[in-house]
Structures are given as structure tokens and as C-alpha cells.
Length: 133
Image 1 (cartoon, one colour):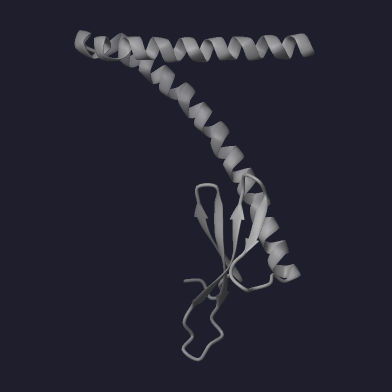
Image 2 (cartoon, one colour):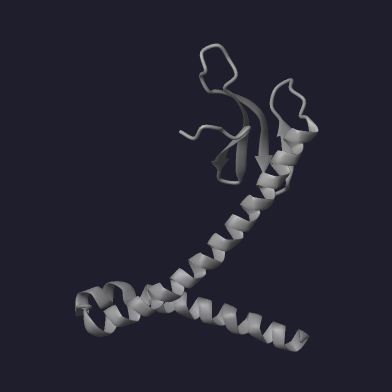
């Protein structure tokens, strides 16, 4: 482990995190994790855990983490879309060069419906942007 641990640990969960204050300044030099808050990324809420109160440093650290987490999630979301484009290209290559008739029969209808839905949504959104702009 690193020589100097951070002051806080964020245990990520689906829509936020549990926030722990780390302490190694004890007689046994063990890492103690004291839960101080729960963060909800959807609504930006910070709930204090138990009977604790958060210091300004605690709140600042949590808000800084929330800003970084929001950027990470936004980056992952767009990265997933670019990966989907790659998957579509790989799927087209697979369908053209490797797929058997049985494999194509198994996936064609679902792929066509998903692509139709995606195309309809993209066309509608693009039309909305063009009429606004």
C-alpha cells in the first residue's frame, strides 16, 4: 500500500457512494474506516451517517469527489456509445463473413428492431436540433 493513505475512502455503489474517513493514527497502526456519510449522485444529496456531523473539510472532499465522479460517469457513458459503434461494425462484418444461416436467423429480427428503434430516435433528435438551430 502507499506510504500515505488518503483521508477519505468512497465505496462506490450504483447511484453514489458510502463515504468513510480513514484513520491510521492508532496504537496498532491499523486502517480504521469510519463511515461518515452516504452520497446520492442522482440528486446531489449528502446524508450524514449516524450521529456524526461533517466538517467543512469533509463536505469539500465529498463535493470534490462528486464532481470527479460525475465526469468519470459522463466519460464512460460516451465511451460506451463509441464501443456500441464498434460492436455494430463488428456485427456487420460477422454477418457478412462468418455467420451461419442459423445464427443469422436467431438474431436478425431482434437486431433489425433495435437498429430501427435507434435510427428512428437519432433521426427525430437530429430533426429537433436542426429546427432549433
